[in-house]
Image 1: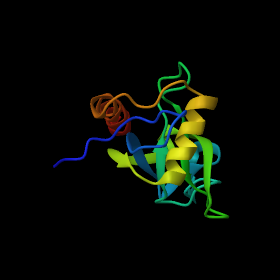
Image 2 (image 1 turned 180 degrees about the horizontal axis):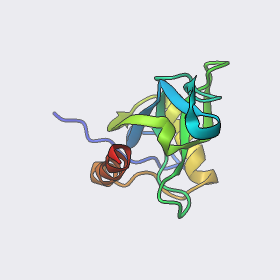
Image 3 (image 1 turned 60 degrees about the vertical axis):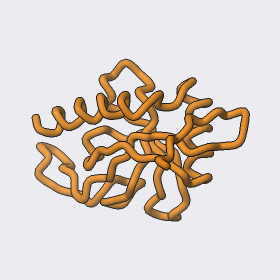
Image 4 (image 1 turned 180 degrees about the vertical axis):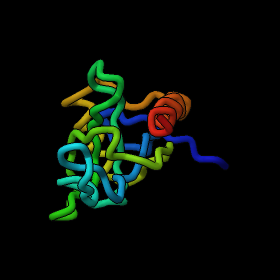
Length: 134
């Protein structure tokens, strides 16, 4: 039997749900003219898996609210990250109670709904991959 995830209802027990997931880039351009490189971001190490909330603002999904393990403490944190710092986009079912709680809190604080379906996530992945390809 195939498992079908349910969306989070912040008023009840947390259930699994679909989420857009990516990884923080290993290195990114930095400084004047982008000639220097830095590993990952200030808050996330390169390769860190981040769980992305749906678009929050009308910026074309340039700035993304994400949940991931912080580079310093390894605790889950919720931060805003530029989409160019994330790669390897995919849709995944989230089961972790800690991540689900952070996502639910993010829905309450930033946005009033979780991802509606895997198809909605796939549409975002197409957009983000086209942007990466230039």
